Length: 376
Image (cartoon, rainbow, N blue to C red; front, top):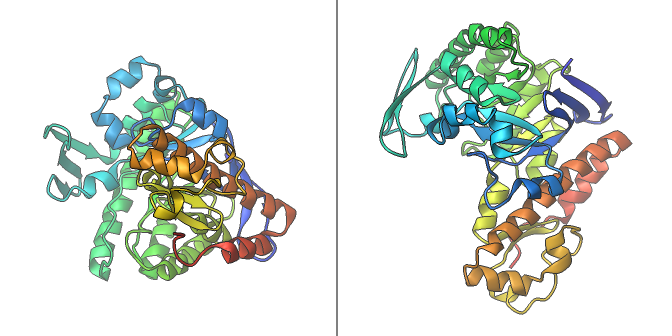
């Protein structure tokens, strides 16, 4: 078994477990920083080590285009190429390709697209996506999928689901060939179905026919209201067998971590904490703080008085405000480090509360402290 549930919250589907991968065990629920092109923006792998980030996400589409598979292969795989020894999950790249509406054409066999870098033409198929991830040597692989936009009517969502399921089926022989060649990576097929309960049920039923080690829950956080996100997620996790890990794709504010864990999610990733850091937004336990606000210019307190990261121990809001207004590059590292420290600390607190049997109380306490609007 690649996944073991070690503790179950008595009042919700929240659970704590451990996922075993070729590059070590990962405690869950886990938040995975996003290293789209083999790097978490503004941070080094030494920073990731200090943060204790034992799982990250990279993107097959971007790495396939640049630096290219041969460069990564010659380096001995993605882990050696980027000098990271933790777990790497790779997104198939389908979402990125399909979001390039003016640069791609989709058919039942795959996706033809033009590189956003140089306009060169490429082709992704269900089989080649597995082969790309095999060349990268990542620990958890996803499948090619078609993610319908929000809102999508029944017919549009059903067509995307049929194509996604067909592509998942076609991934199986490629996976078998990779495993015959020695690959030990785990398969996390992507589950679609938009916000139509019958389609989500059909997707889960189809999943049982695949050699899956975990599931990637796609098609959420695509512009829908949060109450719809959580009600759809509740349905999905209620249908999934408890012995397999659930990865919720692209979701990750501090509130989201608690809400997703409460619905039985084990793995999450999101660019949000790092992206907002580059825009001067610090995440704190009491809300969000725009470091460029006038109130920060003379504020000698830390970003978050309750945070133990080196940024909060050493630097003031006033100094970080000065760096950001002066466009000093170091501020992007400092804010990114702080934001990810908080996200990983929240994930650790969630795991601890589940093991200690107080998840519901800790969740209420955390959400009660959050400011209803951004701090100023």
